Length: 291
Image (tube, rainbow, N blue to C red):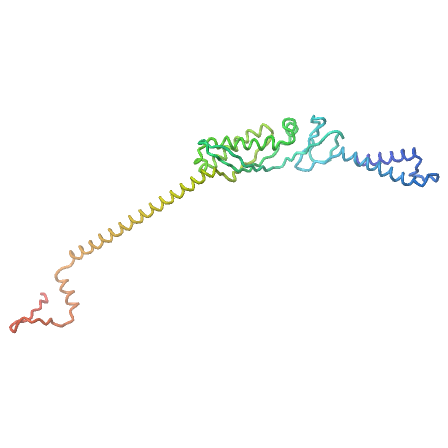
């Protein structure tokens, strides 16, 4: 309806101005000079362009997932949701994205024992749509660099300062919780809703990384030596057990073997030939076959 009204107004003004200039639009003017057609067309185009430009200065569109704040001379005039809107030609409209947004930062801090800690994090957040006019009045349009980024750095520094550098490695989830809790409270003051914090990486100074690497190497050496000691102890126990088993076997063999069994074994192994032994002419070989 507004666009149609502007078109009707534009046509009406063209008719009025053209009649004042003596240039016929609805009815031709035979007395017009050779430049009359050019002036008529130029005037028509100029008026149309004027109203198109005027329309672009007073009309604006807010897309889904966005809201607009109209500001006139530094004062918030109105709050606009998605759709087509009309504004004061002298005012400015600032459009805010109210969908989930992502901010990735790398923050440096000092641990409880004054070691450098570098935390790479990703923060997901969204704006409270109903409070955006207040956010603009309080912070301005550039809220990301004024509020979001400094808050992330501050909360990371505060969290890592609570732990010794060795504990930060093993208590990664706890550190994340500390950062999330502090950042949530801080952003609420600016009508920013924190959705999630992801810790992508935790790094330390090159000196500390070198110490950790050397410590890991030494621990691996100790574990290797301990494994070899245990292996040698197991080998020793195995030899002892084997010796004890063989001794017990011999003992049981002696206890359970009678003279008759020994003779029987001797006979089983005898090939049936008597031994030939020179004992003299009157000697008779004796073979004890048992009773």
